[in-house]
Figure 1: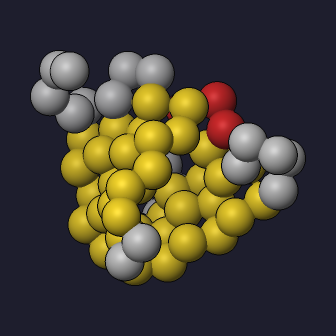
Figure 2: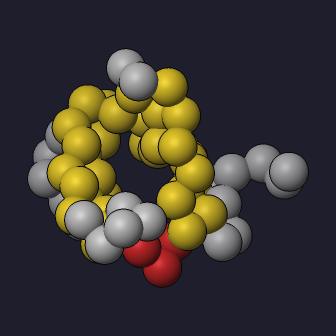
Length: 64
């Protein structure tokens, strides 16, 4: 896999899971790739399609 487009440490992410549930994670690391977002937190890593990411917030509460 190519290098990530962007890395964000200590982010908050809101996304839609595979079953349509909405998740809001705080204090996770985010790596943005062309079609995917890798979210790494206390439970390990998850790869989420970018189309299912609603919002990524940094410590300053800026949306990306």
